[in-house]
Image 1: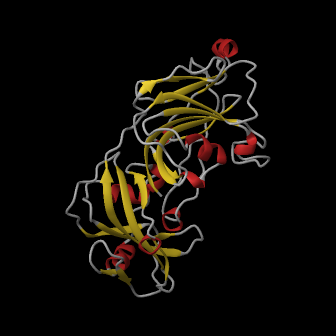
Image 2 (image 1 turned 90 degrees about the horizontal axis):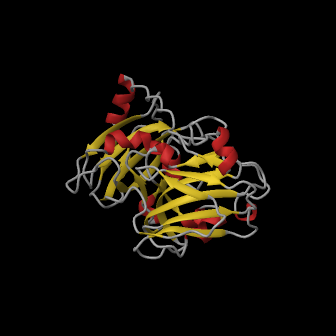
Length: 326
């Protein structure tokens, strides 16, 4: 699911979205007789391991060690350095240890951060200013530059890093851990019998879904929302940020995106995604698993989007793990 990412961490997050093809129940590329009899089978596969980031040079370490961070925890710090600051690769250091709960792999962490341009020392973004901290799951490959440094730290820890932003300029980011919370890894609740004729969902032991699109399936012209598991949490609202596990497929069985293939849930504002998600997830309960069949006018319309052709109907299986104020 492509969504709007906060400007600061969009530049330090390393996207690792797996775009996989159609696979049959026997693991073959075309599905063989199983696909022919049951329809198009959509499985997600693990993304390749990301290449390790290069080790910083002595000059890079020296440059980041010289960055000063002043101010009390919980408030936006004053970050100063001699500009222009240059590094050849991502370089970071822990400024101060936290005193709160320990950060563990798979937990949902909430951070505040301030971003400063390396060329002139001017601030270009701050979650303290917008009052919109960012949450993600520790271990999410999209946050590779943060994971190794933060896992094992405690709430209140501060981390400063210098890296190359999307526009190829050097930026300095000071991150402070505001909160950590353990969340489920899959939907938990009461199973709901789906209507007949819909795409079917089979779950692996860890909850990862395989979707089968029935032969001659006639795609709906309106958004279809079918709960598969009803959770017992609060109802989700359109103005919240949700944390989910999900898999997305085309009607021909092509898997175009999946949090399962990246190994961790993902978080994003529900008002920052395609209308089919906003309208389909809002009103559902936390803990639920939902099947969405999204017509093109509530997806990407007549625009091609990566592996998604123009005018495509999209099929999603979504586990709603958490919802909170955006």
